[in-house]
Length: 161
View 1 (cartoon, rainbow, N blue to C red):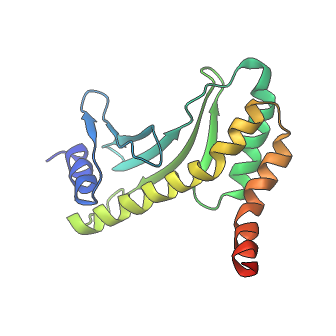
View 2 (view 1 turned 90 degrees about the vertical axis):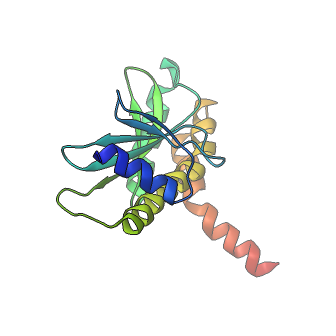
């Protein structure tokens, strides 16, 4: 069994539906919470990098603002990171898992990859609105601050309610 096959089987075991592209060594793991989720599998390194791609490309006029948001978001995120492909204008949230020589049983690999997917999907969910706001002309610092404060404000509202 190839590493790509192991990853695909683990994702299915974790309850994910997917489409495998052996030629590109990728797996489409799109879900209800994130439309475009792609796993790039690197067999030699025994690594999987998950990407949640924002559905709107960044036009040239907003590259500076989105770039600032990406830097601020990546500084705020503990695990995942945002990236902007300057050549295509694609914004994505990314999270990588490098196994190297570590060999996990099927359940362990499924749990690890499912947790990694949850991480990247959560970060994408947190920042989608901020990306959209900056694309619409909002200040990147303000958008980033709003994302950082959202959990505190939600907790405060819950405690007040």
